[in-house]
Image 1 (tube, rainbow, N blue to C red):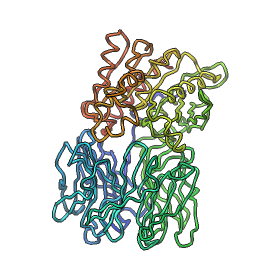
Image 2 (tube, rainbow, N blue to C red):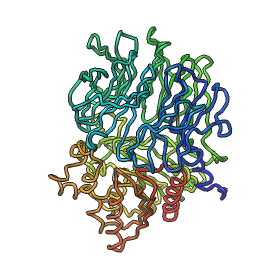
Image 3 (cartoon, helix red, strand yellow):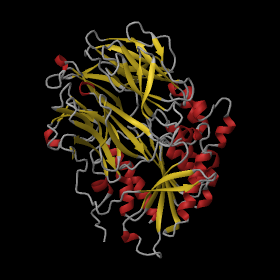
Length: 623
């Protein structure tokens, strides 16, 4: 019998979420990390020798936000400022990130470097210059429509734009070793980027893009491999995956360092020891490789659990690599791998209480053919054998649709443990990577551009058909769940695919009307909306035809809608117009609004409440 004490909130969602980490200066004696162990994402410090686990009793909170959330933090590399920290935080999930500084984490209080709540400040992969004098960030302070790159003098408290007279959406990358240049990217359209090198003093921009159209770039660290150059990721190769290259500025030449038939996602470099590290996305699972730049020897770390890595960093002595990893049965934790002794340790323990690992299940990767024979990969989660003893016992299932849509369903511990809780109660979950998903090459990703609720909705329909063909499925107990784009697709499933008789649906911050969604998007997003979704001024009929609100009369399923009142991307009116129309049509809908949240959840109590509501809503109708 299932132990009734295993509840969602006190078991599966009783977790600490870890979001980021950094070493203190040139030393790895102290580890800084962002977590919500006090209920809100704050910045913490822990002294560690990478031998003992990090725990709440041994850590010190450096920030004490109640409504704000720390999103990213950077330590100064300069020796005399080794205790200096710069971090970015927003309020109630509004995504207008402000910049803060702690000048000495052992003695100083927090200083506010930017104070305009209507301006968005974004961080890059690196923040401080190597001499510690400046930080680099991007901002839309000059125009709401343009996010440009700024250099901020920490001593003089003066900010200057180093991409003046430009329009676009720029993302900062890394400083050159002499602090004279930075690399950065500019998003021109949704599928086209420019790779730039910027002279920070003269403000000259040098375009070093491999191709001008339909190529994606991600900046990487600078290296002394050549006199002057840096690593970067690009899909500008015939394979169409993000692969690793090196650009030599003096020679105006690049070399492909790693060519793979999968995406490379993260790059780390220990300059002093000439060690390069990267993470490959193989069918959704993360694999770590290192390379000795001098000997060219490549090493794969085989002890990494099957899961997903969100960040890697090599210790200054190149003896260890630290990373954030989540698996299907465990949330993100900080791990350390010791090269010298070939040992992997988990430094944090994200579960607050004892968890029933015997009930948890990892998914298996399945594939099905869609309407045009396009193979679609999906993760299938099945509950324990207790619920599937013989062919006569049928179970319900949830189709889970990831957000993005240019994102990827991966084997992590998503939605605060919602998957594992539903599994423990006897439901199955199918989570497909429909066309438009990342991780399967550029051409597959671009299939959803200007085709929302087109081919990918048919992929979802064929996912349901695949479910219904399984001998263990209860055909009368199928539900659907999704957040953001997944919420949009959830609404489309129950309205445009209503003949599949969905019994329950949960939409979290999903757009319902593509006309209003594209019109109310943040101004810096508007330049990509026509290509990505559609133009509301010239394609209103097309967008209406693809919008679930047009098909409300078809809905038969019970529906739960969850929305953040301060969502800047999918504004609250997207949910309210759907709720109002459903209520006028006499349809069943429950509506929950979080007044202090935006596009997602920044407060632990809100996350637990939202996903508990979702779980109870689904279980009541599918068990």
